[in-house]
Amino acid sequence: MEKEKAAAAKNKETDENKEQVTNEDAIARGDNLRPCEPKEKAMEPGKRSDNLTTSRQDITSHEHTSHDDIQRSCQQLIDDINAKRKRDTDLVNDFKKALEEEINTTCNILEESIVQTYEKHSKTIQDKLQELFAVVERISKLEGELIDFKQALGVLYNDMQVVERSRGQERDF
Image 1 (cartoon, rainbow, N blue to C red):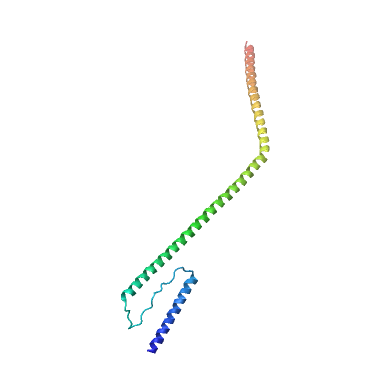
Image 2: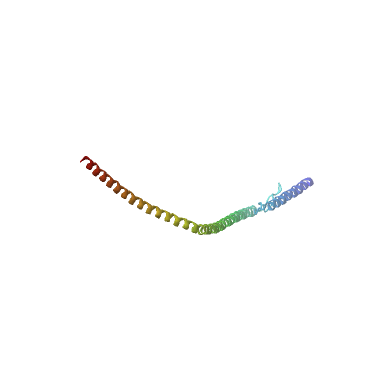
């Protein structure tokens, strides 16, 4: 009998150590969930509960409490996940805004640089264009003079032909 008591005490101590290690492991992992622990330990063989309905109610209320704890823990996990998702979404939105501002700033700098380049080369381009238009105008005047010269040359040629014909006719007579 003493051996049985010693064995039971040793089992009880081992169970308590395992339970303590399990609780410490859960805390070390950061689990919010607590391992389920029965309210009353198993009875030794040969001993019976005098009041079965009382123990059954205790078990039922313990199960109900255990389910409530699990449900609360699950809800807490879901709330934590949703909070992290919201934080991630806010972070992405902030990143988008910062990126848009950076792009706008860069585009404005580029636009200013382009305008400065245009202004810098605008005078040179304008001078070259005026020179080109002056050359085109001179070419057009020369074309007009060339047309006039061709017409005068044509008239001269015709006159020379007429003169030559008339000389040729005078010789024939």
